[in-house]
Image 1 (tube, rainbow, N blue to C red):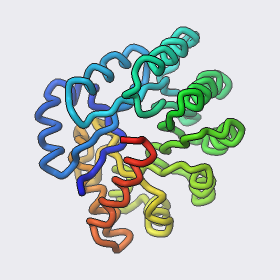
Image 2: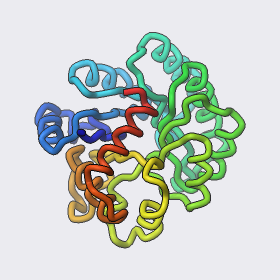
Image 3: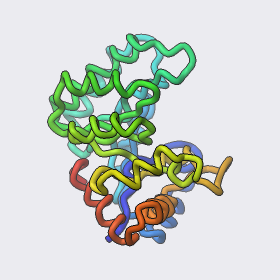
Image 4: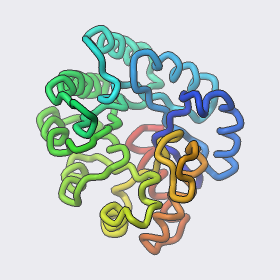
Length: 255
């Protein structure tokens, strides 16, 4: 059974300049499928083209809360049109709320998040959620809209209670490089105690470097290290972690 990187930005310049080598190294490490999320309207075409050119790459498109500028009505219309025309899009994302960024405007972010959640429901797609300091607000939206396909909470960093609320709604928690740091005690405790079917694995490459790789570009092959870390924390066989997390990614994203 091979690994799935459920969230990696392969269209970023740090990776896309030598994408064939990046993918080859990942496959040698046992990673054979990659979900590539878009974050803004100007990189959606690049994501779609990249995924069409390489096997095992799956696109997701969305308007990320950290990259919002001006009026997004045209971008939302473009997203709707792409969802109509490209059945290969596996999810709407990366979308969400971020109240950690300076001068965060909750109302402006909600005005972009809510219509994207509605599009996900309309087109029967899961969502890839980016959430910082806003889990309760996002959960409120999810309860109101009752998505048919749920999705993934990228780089989950909330409380045990918030994790439980996402799981009740059918979501899976994205576990990435943060879990490799011994100081991430809250996250490690969640990984140790929640059911294994609660998680998927991800790198967010080229961002979110793992422990021991600080200050370096992150690569999708390192999802194998994340799997090893989760196995150690849970004191379970590595193959069991790989099989379970890959099955969860496959099912929720229909890969």
